[in-house]
Image (cartoon, rainbow, N blue to C red; front, side):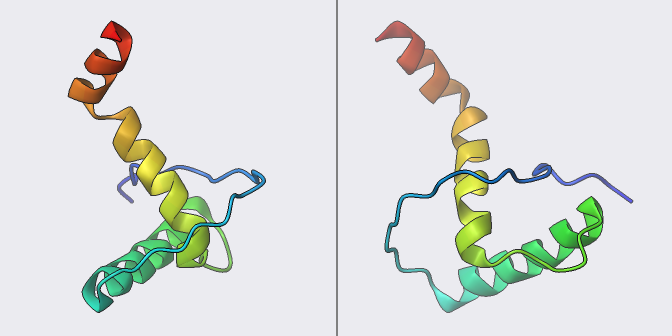
Length: 73
C-alpha cells in the first residue's frame, strides 16, 4: 500500500477553533480519514476535527516559501 503523507497522529491538548468547510471538502476529509485509518492500522477513522490540524501542520511544514520567509524574519 502506498504511504500517505500524514503519519500517525499524537494526542495534543487542542485549542478550540470554529471554521466553515464546503460540503465537498468535508467529504474529501472524511475519505482521507478512512484511508488514513487503513494506512496506519487504526480500527476506526479519526473525526475531521482531529484530522484537520495535522493536515494543516503538514501543509505549513512543507511550504518552502513560508519556511524561507520565517527564517529571514
